[in-house]
Length: 277
Image (cartoon, rainbow, N blue to C red; front, side, top):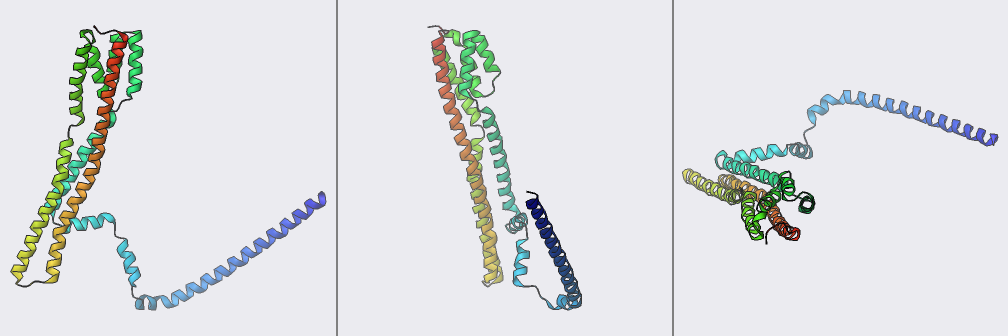
């Protein structure tokens, strides 16, 4: 056993010495090569700096370094500040409304199954007042509808159903608040873009008429500037349309949840025999 350990130790020492020697040799060679390369660069760098022109690849790399925001800003300025500014304002207002609606709808989302369990437990233990207290402490339109139904539970099940339907319509209106403005901005953005395009084309033809000759550069430049407003208008409409569809889907889900939960609440009141026949 001792011989084996001695052989392993000796082998390790030899391997370590060989590695260190190789590393040191490589370091010496690398240093020598670096010094020779530095001397060569010092001798040839002035001439190379004067004689070496920029290659097309280097020019392309420098062009790619231009940021995305800089390119957008350049196209925005080329499109004209008048209509491009209006389209940008439409985008900002539309996004503000979309963000506000998304936050409101997410806060309005309630776990209806959990809420019904709490109300059932409160009805069995504390009666209507305990159930109303649960609804007060729970945010969201579903809890508000439940509170209105429970508040009129002593007047009969028909009055409870009418109260739930009436207040449900009110809550539905609050959920859909501002959605019509988003749809207006979706329709308005491409219209403004097309208007800017038409006006830009008119200005391009006016320039051609003033020059008395059709110059390809003049026509191409005018058409490019005119079409930029259409592009930004379409981009704005696409962005707002995505948010609009999400908001409409969220509202539909909340409305379905409110209707199902309201039916469950009426069944629960009938089952508990609290309302008058």
